[in-house]
Length: 373
Image (cartoon, rainbow, N blue to C red; front, side):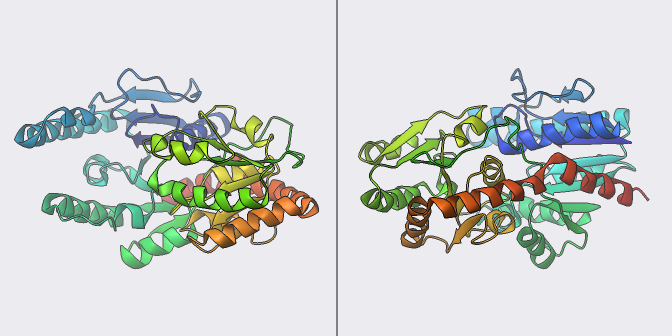
């Protein structure tokens, strides 16, 4: 079986990039599929995660982002030129590869893949949720038209794969997709052989300093926790465009900010509770990552990932969205009750195994075989 992935770039240390590489490696090494990956804008950047040498990789060399070096009419003309170049090159590659299945994500131009896929089946992966891609408001008539056309194309895909039940229902009910299934992400689970003993007076947050990660709520929560437990520390692993905005408040609290790391499981093991304050999540890879190190989780019940992963009161707590007082109370409850922490940490460790490649990838194999029948 020939599987072709089409994506924008594998240059970032991002969750989607890690998931795609892990899946391609597994399909090649365990099922013997002939796997190809085409990127659009990779340029000279190295792929940050190890890609199996049997995976066929090529970059189309479009570099669509270069349009933003210009303004006005020149930017528009550059965009049209690059889009036409993309259409030509992706069509040429598809004709040469002759894939059985093409997989794109919701950030890729689904209309182009539909036009050029030939006899191949098209699968779209929803990594950013219906409500974050389709429902994003815009008054620009060109963008509005392109959105409408793109999501009309999504309805024509042979399958749309969502990460959560909530997102799948949005696609079915709001975009009227008739072919939708749910397959969760493969998660990079803890393989260090070490787990947190939950005795450290440390709490961990992993995420970008960005609006969607709910950083203002995190700051307010920690203010409340620190009043009751001034000997505990919040460790933040992340970077981002808003980092400097919070420098003053961070310096006034017991918070340490660390750079993102490849060895995040080692850092989870130095902490006792994991926090997630996101406004929305398509899945939230960091929750089962932290769980696999034995950490109980406290998270806002945001759409949609946390509710699919956390079992309330068993391996973590789901807090009503934006209720910082209730969130802080849950954190303090875990701080004050080590036996509960230990019970929930053990349950979290077991729960995280649902997202191991050995559990998730057979679902992809079954999907591939079913749409080729």
